[in-house]
Length: 134
Length: 162
Image 1 (tube, rainbow over the protein chains, first blue to last red):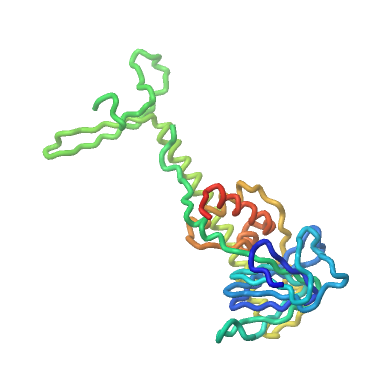
Image 2 (cartoon, rainbow over the protein chains, first blue to last red):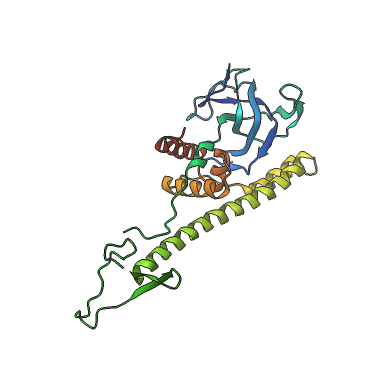
């Protein structure tokens, strides 16, 4: 099953990640998970699919209700997530004639979930006090 | 100038019969117009009221400045990290070497005050005009993605701009 709408996430031992753009972020130490998370963001037509299930097949991140079966996945404009070890994307076939970056993640506890831009917030104009309000 | 002029300060004007010890501190603005100078508009405002406006404005600018500085520092950190990541991708350093380096860049997201997240995010969006993703904002403010998502979704609902 592939999910396209939030909230949706996957947890797997190996994920296949693909996107036109891959951005790594500095790792973080998560309070409850207890291991180093190598964070990433996939954007510009991205997808993440489970290639190998977790053993035992249950969510290691219990707060998240994630898909866990092989071939379960998510697809969207932006996907965020983390791998347990640093991930090396290579060149793969993207959508149509486009090339993309992608690869299997290293085996471990890997997670990906749908993200989105909040572009509508750009319409908000914060008030700057330029005159004193009586 | 008529007393009901909108230019006239709403603060009570000082009275000459008041105690001589009463603080007397007003700013007067004269505006001439017409040729030859026919009309004179006089605005009188207590200095304290005018200064308060300036102080509020400066406070706001300071907050904006510190938010932008915070983001620039994080972006610099990210560029440095990307440099090492590229070395790792190009097999110039081993995975173990990279992991050691990455530890120096590691951070622990902690729950932040949601009103602060809201203020800083709006300043950033408005000042730069860039729509940052949840991952970016989480990295900038050092708090969990879930918290950023909660704040942004709430903001969208409040402003009814979905």
